[in-house]
Length: 421
Ligand SMILES: [Zn+2]
Image 1: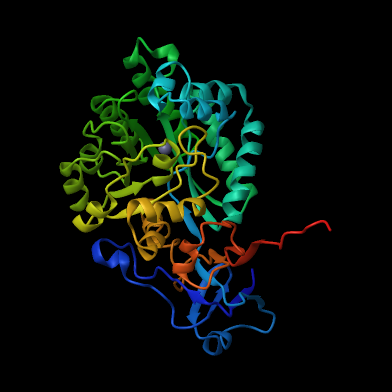
Image 2: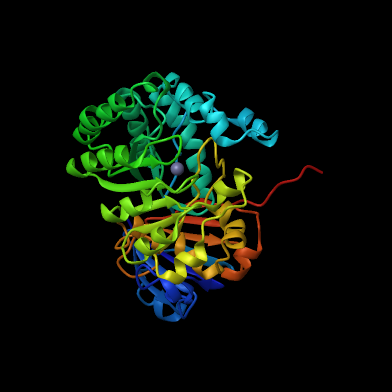
């Protein structure tokens, strides 16, 4: 696969040293030097160019960063990248005063995307997701968790997950698939919720695992979605089938989902806008990652952000993700929410960059391979047009990366804009 020497970096933010919690989240992790060498897709060394260059062979490729910031490729640990249709109309209705839950309860919201996703072919889903995934890559994201959850029939959920698997083969974006059949009770099951839970546990989960289409299972445990008992039943069936667990909880109403996620050893519990003190305490004493989604709070026009400072200060593992989805956060990429994320969550740039790299990778069970620039790990790298981390966050756009490297190969290079005279 060859070698790549990345040199002349303004700063190399490594995120080295494993997942971080508490005060360690804010410790700067910057390499002493301006160069990084990758061989056969893996990082060999980071440090001063004179030292690193000696390790390179004669036909090593080079990337001169021109004094720009080098970071690990961003890891987006919560996305709904695969779906049919658009909900631009709903965005306007929300601006006119309708709430997310009102629209959902009136048959819109997730229900609208379910109708569009069922109507789409696997190829349709792949081609629309591919356009979004290309934006992710051009914004420095090199790995993304992708959820199903807009099919809500066995065949349509499998169709979404098959599209996600093909996406990971077509593009140099690493895809970690999650089965989210328990995203909403579909309207045809509105009066027989138990039957839908049984469909999830007895038919969908076995079908998904038989094809090896998911690594995680997720449930939306909240008002208007699944209650704690239903959530427990789905998570238990998923765990018994060999899937690891994630959970949407405490976005609108604290039902006890966070505590349940910790009790069941889930890898992450996500949203947490209204997490309780008991939830924070449970997370602080666990390895379950609190995944915060500030872009969603902004996009929904809410001012109720997850209590990032309380979670960090209590010692919980905190990651941040884009929550890219067609309804509640149509963010272009994780990069686009870094600046508003630090502003509203009151996190420092260093904390946020650890949250979207090594801690996000840990929540996906990949802290040994992704999320930091250390020897032996995948050479997934983002180069941003900023001198250092502080300047990256200060620049609220342009949000494209200057270059993106996946497995030691330059897979994206930004081009200067062209103007007609
Ligand atoms: Zn979500």
